Length: 200
Image (cartoon, rainbow, N blue to C red; front, top):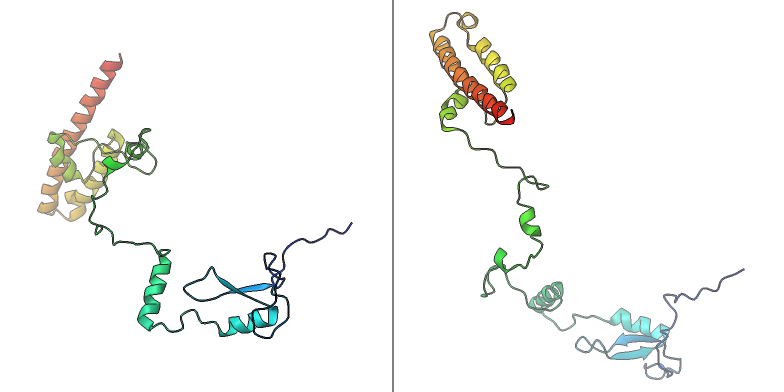
C-alpha cells in the first residue's frame, strides 16, 4: 500500500499564500512565495511567483546602506536577541549573593557538606604535640600505626650511619627521626587504648 507523502517540499508554494498574482510588475503568475519588504518591516511581505522570488532574493542585501560600524552593532545586538545586556558586576543593582536564592530543600548546602559528591571531607586537626614529629617524619594526620611503621623503617634505613659512611649529619637526623617516631607511636597507642576502653 502506497502512503501519500503530505510533507511540505522546499520549493512548494507557501500554503498561506494569498490568492493573487505576483507582485512583480507585469507578471500574471500566481503568487506563492513571500519575501520581506525591507529590513525595518520584516513581517510585511511581497508575494512573488517562484522565478521572481528567486530574482528578488538574489538581489536582497539585508545590510544595504549600513556602515561597517552599524553592521557590527547590529550583529552584536542579534547575539543577545536585541535585548539589553551588561558586563558582569556593572549593572548597578545589588550584587548576587547566596542569601538571595530560595533553597527550601537545602540543595546548595548539601554540595558543601562533608561526604557530598565532588567534595573532600576536611582533615581532622593535627594534635599540637604531634605537629613537629609528623613534620620530621614527612607524614600527614590522620595516619595509622602501619603507615607510621612503614615510614619509620624507610627513613631509618636511609639515614642510618652505616648506610652513609659514618656521616655525623645522618646520625643526628636519625636521632630526630627516632624521637619523632616514639612520640607519634605513643600517641597512637594511647588513642587506640582509649577507644578500646570506650567500646568495652
